[in-house]
Length: 382
Image 1 (tube, helix red, strand yellow):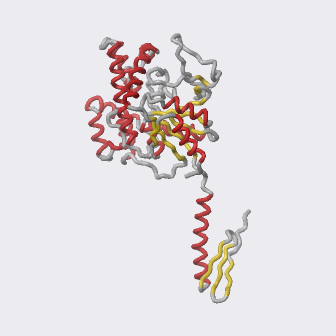
Image 2 (cartoon, one colour; image 1 turned 135 degrees about the horizontal axis):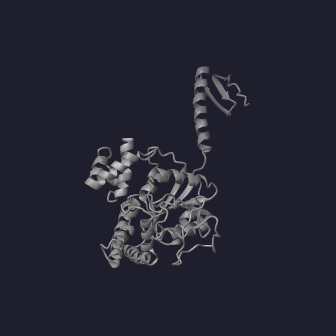
Image 3 (cartoon, one colour; image 1 turned 120 degrees about the vertical axis):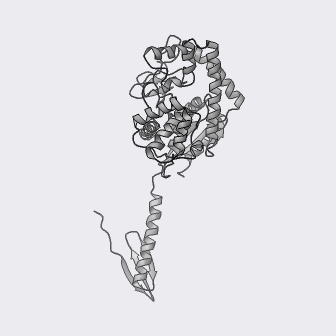
């Protein structure tokens, strides 16, 4: 048990000296009362400084972001290998199981497989993503928050945020590298969005019904009754983002808000800077490759399992075009062209979203990224 020593006061000439031996602080004044009062103030200042100096260093986190097709994953993997890190996916579609080709998942293998040579592949020699004990690996690097729920299961922003933080805390000794293009996920983490503890499933169903009957414009009107600046916070052209934001705002009865700024994390956000023409060429090529890699078969398997084509998971780019092709509404060539067009539009919207955040460092090439990350992880907190 720690013993607290008594404060001492004595007279020295025309002044009184007060001394606190517990933290070795002294003060003086013309009277005992004044000396005691000044000591109290001095002790408070010293204790505050001591508190600041003993604050635990914030956990450093790297975020690699950018538009679809910009090469985020490959760069993040290279960083993870060099800086002893692991990956966390910030992609709202890669959480769905069985949706690999259409969501451009990394070629993951389960924890029980050999990390380099024992990859499983399908008949088209394409890697099969597996989930074993929530652990997936890509060339020996663990990647979290991929293959989390079935395509017909709801998965909210709050759930991703909770799981992301749990994943970070579960890996205390290696560098977290978050990689993805879902801007709302990243903003919620970096800016500590205040989210309700639990979502009302009936509210989500009601919002989806309103969107189908009256369009997402009606939901945006509902949101603006509580948050007039919503257009500056989310991509309002994305129906799923609008519904997610509505769930948060209508549940909390408050604008979509940042937290109080006391995050235990320190972030370095890096955007992959790719010339627009180069990005579009990559997206066009990838759309063709997806069809060659089995996107049609993957979609058919999902439908054969009973998943409704109206599910939000199957409304994403790639799947909705293939479903129209399977229904005989369009040709395969038209499906590919629509896939290319919608990916270009989506990439443009992502860039518009991310460019608003002036904290993001836009870099081209691994060397520039490597140098900035090295400086960040080597620097002291703050």
